[in-house]
Amino acid sequence: MKNVRFVGLDVHAETIAVAVAETGGEVRSLGTIPNRRESVGRLIRKLGKPEQLRVCYEAGPTGYVLYWQLSELGVKCEVVAPTLIPVKAGDRVKTDRRDAEKLARCYRSGDLTAVWVPDAAHEALRDLVRARLAGKRDQLRARNRLSKFLLRHGRRAPAGASAWSTKYLVWVKSLRFEQSAQQLTLEDYLHEVEHAAERIARLERSIDAAIETLPVKMRAVIEALQSLRGIAQISAVSIMAELGEVSRFERARQLMGYSGAVSWEDSSGERVHRGSISKAGNAHLRRIVVEAAWSYRHRPAIGKTLAARQRRSSAPVTELAWKAQHRLHQRYVRLIARGKCKQHAVTAVARELLGFIWAIGIAVERTHTPPEMQRAA
Figure 1 (cartoon, helix red, strand yellow):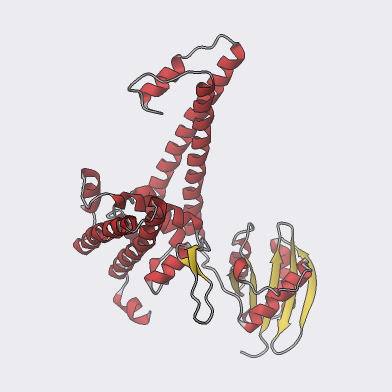
Figure 2: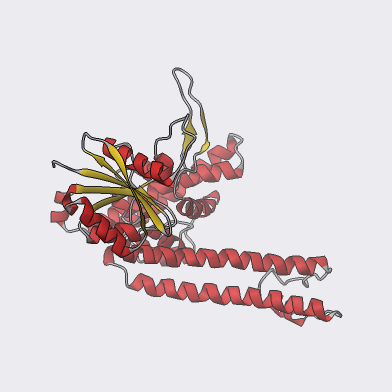
């Protein structure tokens, strides 16, 4: 298309710096506008026809609101990965205007990498899942404060009362301190622990309700992923919330790279140097998969809980899950035999577990995709 204009936006909470790169022409700054819907609408009308505009901005704390607004106006917009924007070694000046101009220039030359943008419903599920994660972290802090307070004053739980069990909490509630300030401290810490537990239970009920509203294909993938050892409902929903459609990854290696669970490399000529995992990817997905990978330390087996989850899955999915148990356990055993520490071995297992997640997701999505759409793809 002729007369295409490439627009770079440096987006902040209150302002947006704008720059335009003409096809084969100059790159110029258009100044700064307020980050408001009406201001963005006026900018688009000023720049020309929506079908002739190509807009990009960096992924960041402002989210995807601007992306959805531009899409409603008929403008093609891409959200780009900030860490993959080319940087000149000698450039020591950074301003909003220069950032917008660099975005426009790099976008025109095709040097930017776009990130996947979820739709509104998908992002809502992701927000809910991450809210539960925040609740779990707050619960851990609350429990640590209470347990360390008791330890500091020499209060130890009776034998047989495992930490944070019902018996343990009953014992904590029965404690009394001579000083009223310490008694108030105990009651406050205990209240926070109970409040955190109630919050998590409430969020998990909300996640259960949200699953029922998902499309059939997404619900099928969530159920199928639970056939894997170490992945229950919350983990499966979290994986789905972070990935979206698994079929957007053409190969399992792309999914592994997306998680940041692949090693970094610095090779030149005959020298090949690989190190630890790059962590240049989705940290939430990587955390879930690493937690699940610890289950594969144990020999392949199907307990009552896993068997109940697998009853809802098809035979091919169950076979893949059983194959995963054998392969990943053998992988763990071999790495430990070679002298690797447990953390490194589990990380390697987690990377291969992503391959099985990809295979199961692809298989389930294909069964829920109409044949005409598969041929079009």
